Image (cartoon, rainbow, N blue to C red; front, side, top):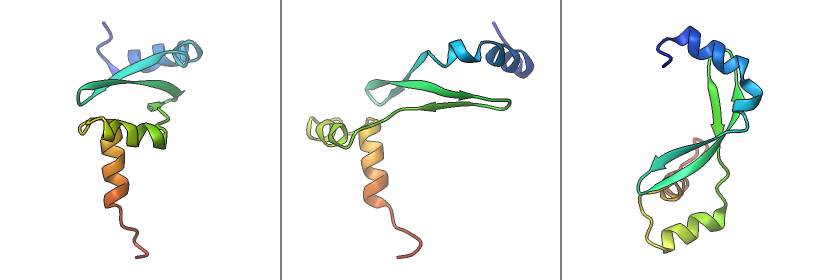
Length: 84
Protein backbone atom coordinates (compact mmCIF):
# COMPACT_ATOMS: atom_id res chain seq x y z
CA UNK A 1 0.00 0.00 0.00
CA UNK A 2 1.28 3.48 -0.86
CA UNK A 3 2.10 5.42 2.27
CA UNK A 4 3.92 8.54 1.12
CA UNK A 5 3.35 11.52 -1.16
CA UNK A 6 6.18 10.84 -3.62
CA UNK A 7 5.08 7.27 -4.36
CA UNK A 8 1.46 8.39 -4.72
CA UNK A 9 2.41 11.21 -7.10
CA UNK A 10 4.82 9.12 -9.17
CA UNK A 11 2.39 6.25 -9.67
CA UNK A 12 -0.48 8.65 -10.40
CA UNK A 13 1.54 10.45 -13.05
CA UNK A 14 2.88 7.20 -14.51
CA UNK A 15 -0.63 5.84 -15.03
CA UNK A 16 -2.30 9.20 -15.65
CA UNK A 17 -4.09 8.27 -18.89
CA UNK A 18 -5.40 4.97 -17.56
CA UNK A 19 -6.51 6.49 -14.24
CA UNK A 20 -8.44 9.21 -16.08
CA UNK A 21 -10.74 6.47 -17.41
CA UNK A 22 -11.65 5.37 -13.89
CA UNK A 23 -14.71 6.37 -11.88
CA UNK A 24 -14.68 7.18 -8.17
CA UNK A 25 -17.70 6.46 -5.99
CA UNK A 26 -18.13 9.16 -3.34
CA UNK A 27 -20.78 8.65 -0.66
CA UNK A 28 -22.82 11.75 0.14
CA UNK A 29 -25.69 11.20 2.53
CA UNK A 30 -27.44 7.94 1.63
CA UNK A 31 -26.22 7.84 -1.98
CA UNK A 32 -22.89 7.03 -3.63
CA UNK A 33 -22.18 9.28 -6.61
CA UNK A 34 -19.86 8.50 -9.53
CA UNK A 35 -17.19 11.11 -10.19
CA UNK A 36 -14.64 10.91 -12.96
CA UNK A 37 -10.99 11.83 -12.70
CA UNK A 38 -10.67 14.78 -15.07
CA UNK A 39 -7.11 15.74 -14.26
CA UNK A 40 -3.94 14.48 -12.63
CA UNK A 41 -1.15 16.94 -12.05
CA UNK A 42 2.01 17.44 -10.06
CA UNK A 43 0.13 18.40 -6.89
CA UNK A 44 -3.40 17.05 -7.07
CA UNK A 45 -6.25 15.11 -8.62
CA UNK A 46 -9.23 16.87 -10.14
CA UNK A 47 -12.54 15.03 -10.02
CA UNK A 48 -15.82 16.18 -11.50
CA UNK A 49 -19.44 15.27 -11.90
CA UNK A 50 -22.20 16.85 -13.93
CA UNK A 51 -25.44 17.25 -12.00
CA UNK A 52 -28.42 18.20 -14.14
CA UNK A 53 -30.97 20.71 -12.90
CA UNK A 54 -33.81 18.23 -13.36
CA UNK A 55 -31.88 15.61 -11.36
CA UNK A 56 -31.59 18.11 -8.51
CA UNK A 57 -35.30 18.88 -8.41
CA UNK A 58 -36.32 15.24 -8.89
CA UNK A 59 -34.09 14.13 -6.01
CA UNK A 60 -35.52 16.78 -3.69
CA UNK A 61 -39.10 15.90 -4.69
CA UNK A 62 -38.29 12.24 -3.98
CA UNK A 63 -37.25 13.15 -0.44
CA UNK A 64 -33.46 13.01 -0.84
CA UNK A 65 -32.64 15.87 1.49
CA UNK A 66 -29.07 14.88 2.41
CA UNK A 67 -27.53 14.06 -0.96
CA UNK A 68 -25.36 15.98 -3.38
CA UNK A 69 -28.44 17.43 -5.06
CA UNK A 70 -29.67 19.01 -1.84
CA UNK A 71 -26.21 20.43 -1.12
CA UNK A 72 -26.16 22.11 -4.54
CA UNK A 73 -29.73 23.37 -4.18
CA UNK A 74 -28.96 24.82 -0.75
CA UNK A 75 -25.81 26.51 -2.04
CA UNK A 76 -27.68 28.19 -4.88
CA UNK A 77 -30.75 28.98 -2.79
CA UNK A 78 -28.71 30.70 -0.06
CA UNK A 79 -26.21 32.39 -2.38
CA UNK A 80 -25.93 36.15 -2.24
CA UNK A 81 -23.65 37.99 -4.61
CA UNK A 82 -21.21 40.56 -3.30
CA UNK A 83 -22.81 42.93 -5.82
CA UNK A 84 -26.21 42.76 -4.11
